[in-house]
Image 1 (cartoon, chains in turn orange, yellow):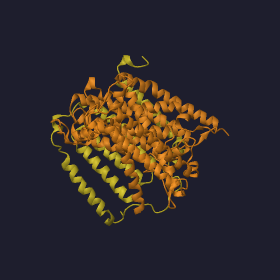
Image 2 (spheres, helix red, strand yellow; image 1 turned 135 degrees about the vertical axis):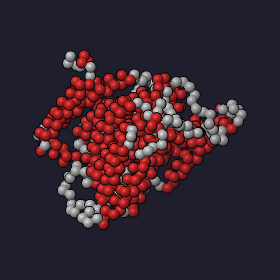
Image 3 (cartoon, helix red, strand yellow; image 1 turned 120 degrees about the horizontal axis):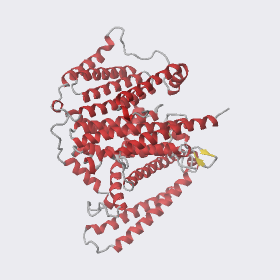
Image 4 (cartoon, one colour; image 1 turned 45 degrees about the vertical axis):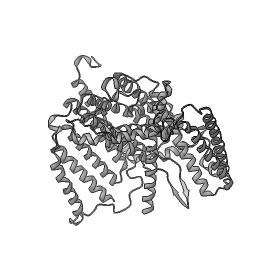
Length: 427
Length: 171
């Protein structure tokens, strides 16, 4: 009993840490990425001892600001629901991760660990159910603030979330028909197969239309541009969280980015093979673990050496530019890269090519989890990229797209998938 | 474990139901009803029917009550002055919590009401989506389809009653 509890706790803490480190990184990526897209410099002022890390210090400053700010609340609010709404949004955002697998089985000391917090029979439906609860936080928060702007934002968000949930469900049903299971671990596992021996059997390959529907629905559910009617600055100030400040606002803000991470993780897990590395099955990784580890360490050492040389060259070039602590930055970063590179080079002396079975299992898990996190990062960046590139829809356009275009397309996709499967499996 | 979940879900349903009737504002009543739905989902989970539990949340809490809330908010508008003050329904709701706890704590001494559990093994596939689908689309297909026809008629009727004569699609 006790080891089971510890195992579950370890997995929950791991997922929590992954999400919670994604949130500030995404906020940084949003600010720096938007600056890059709009040809600006972006945040670069906050510094610790002259280290600016390309604006990465700003999230720390943001957090400190939000924690110490005065909590201004509207006098005529609904007291309970006003305080309850941000908490609900954040809880709902965090609980979807319970069913997303972040790795295959890990074999250690004769025991097998499944790398998912809760391997539910009905995982796919759980995702839909939990994401449908997210509407409450936004709608209640907007209503309880008792302001016309927040109220309009809440109504808009409820309308768009209801509309696009159906599209999302239809897209997921297509996926369910193809893979024949609601269980997410099984679904990701099946995506490791190859069609005709070379094409990965990813969700996007077997359900391309479903993928487009799903990604549109995810963007609408997370209330991101082009579906950002809930918080449109020029129309309704900041939408449902206009009247929130300090940590309550921070919860809404963090939940938005946590939802983005969920969206990206779902897209990666359902349509892009999750933790599966294409053409590199787990058995192959475990067979060739020693060789792979040696190669990775050598490549890492080379990469860090190259980085160090880049930083040192920059340090020499920028000498005398600022005449203050900022000049130290490239040199310090170069030294850090050099130390890491030397450490990786030194680890080659530990004979990584003679790796045991347990080590091979750990390496395979690390590689797969790392690949999954990299996929999440890619799709999270896609969210940001779309936001700063595409103009947003008008409210009636969002409704028309949802009900008159995406819904029929989803139904047709479902019927076509069913017919195709029936034809393929005819005895 | 099933017993614990049963009493937890039952307490949530009771609390939600009573507080829903007792609360003055329609929006908080809707919220209490959602709590009650979550309680019934917990009951389904305790009865080894995860599919029904998730559907309970997905359909009732996630779709129907969101629509209700949407309509209530549209009709009622922002928070009424009477609702903005300190909440008043805490007194009945607060009294219910200890009552529910006492119920849970003393249930095992009430004759014939021991903590419910399952005496034997469940039949294979019990409560799984496949089994539910076989029942709905096999054994009870006729009833299932008839109910869906009733629902379609109801939707068309609501459309006909609710909308302006000239904007109906068939006019």
